[in-house]
Length: 228
Image 1 (tube, helix red, strand yellow):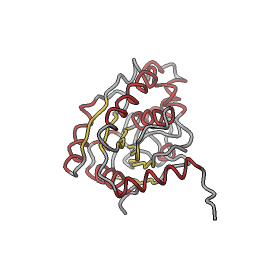
Image 2 (cartoon, one colour):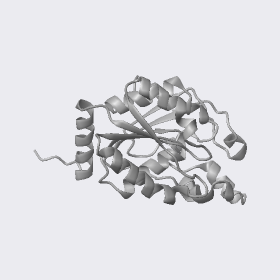
Image 3 (cartoon, rainbow, N blue to C red):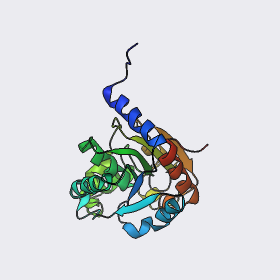
């Protein structure tokens, strides 16, 4: 009987199956807004200790923004892909930029993406800052942060690690509800098309330093699903 799945879904399953039996992917980390590559150090160290080859991608989060970062990220992925399979891990805005890069260039050979606290459904904090005339703090990343992606239908399997410790300035800026990491509401981390979703005890920034978040990221990069 012929399959009723879409060609994109079939391609995604093929990529995921190939990744499950092939070598570990090279992992490219993408930082969030107001951060730099140095913030990725603890996560990079833990993933390397778990056997992954890890690199990081730096960009100007406010002055350059997403549009300037996207072509550079796509080129970096293409260079890495010359040496084997590639996976991405993006924190906050970095997760949005990682998925937007793949949405614009679906031919890129990325098998899996782990998002750490990324507001894929759009950020209430970003929208509130814009309403208050403080959008300059978000710079050229404002549009992507406030709108999010809405859904994911790309080839790469995407997993979300969300935080549950509501410590952060976001709680003072916007009403995030009873469940958040202090900057991003739990509901903002969920969109249709995610392959898996898990919750760890960490704040938004704390996701980068959490041993459990790193272990869950490694599990998804290896298996396409989080540990139970």
